[in-house]
Length: 229
Image 1 (cartoon, rainbow, N blue to C red):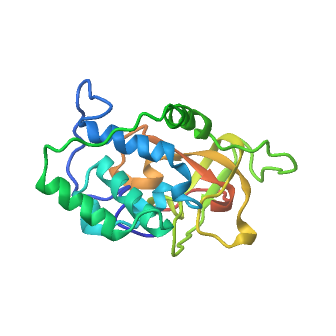
Image 2 (cartoon, helix red, strand yellow; image 1 turned 180 degrees about the horizontal axis):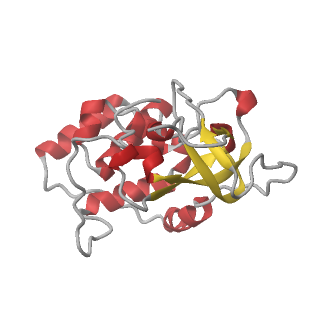
């Protein structure tokens, strides 16, 4: 999906402000959003939360913060799954807008709390043992990224398409989360590919600048050299 979320290499968004000793959450509601996402991980299946975030209206996406995008995508997923109605959401939104000091209900379900505490470590890496899957590329191989454009979610950044890099690391095979035909789903080898800065940004690249991107095997093809800049 080519959308406003794919900002790599784009200009005009200003500098990245680094906050010293930045807290994990700036507001309590941000922690609640993360907890909701943790306790209902299947809501975003089969493509995951990134797909729903990428589907946010472009103007709303640009003016929303990190956890605001999480919240918007979570609401969208709940609505699409039929777990929440638009009327219910509008009613609660209206209530808290009119009563900003109203207390937010808190549950004391210890079983759910325990589940939320363990979900992230368990879901951090959904790897397969790769049994029977032979990687096409090895460390040190020169690879070229395909110019792949699909009408749906993809983990392939737009700015790296058509560029040449070098395989730096091989991971275990993992399911591809992209919108691809059923015949192409299932585990694939995943590689960390190193790209020289000049290959991506031309003569404007900083000296000695390299970038590592994790990529599924179907994104790559053999290559013998870089692109002319």
